[in-house]
Image (cartoon, rainbow, N blue to C red; front, side, top):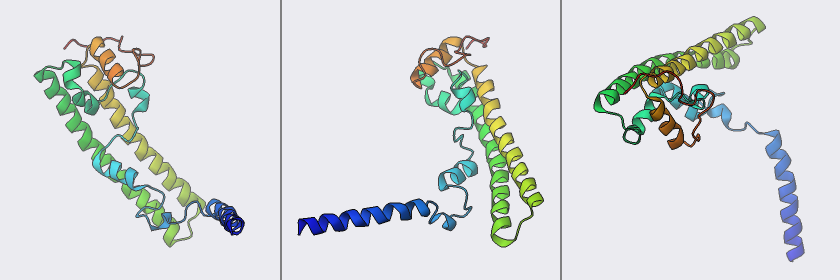
Length: 182
């Protein structure tokens, strides 16, 4: 009896694996924008970074949101917190507007395939526009990392990098650049 159950289990497992490999996208066609996860859609709609500024973050250029989260550890005074808070609000507003543009372009791109037989020119044009819009959004997030870093001392950048688990260097920049004092 055990042998029969073991054989049945092994047969079921052996046939399930190839089926899963053949259907890796099963269910994704139910998403609002089929090529985008719910997490990415949420990030775009709400101005979240979604790792768009990792080039800055991992090279010693903190962003406003996480600096505010660590304000006490960094020893930020009220005036500096207010300045960085204003940067965060500006960044979020710009990122939401840019994210909405990306979402609209992605929805149009999805519809192009769903509702029509797209030409190569239409696909290339739409894909390039999405790339341009995503580049603008990424630039927004990166720009605010630069502006935030300019408001921190090298010591605060080093504290930030350590608190975020990047060690003491934080990359090539490492908090040793010319910053304004707090």
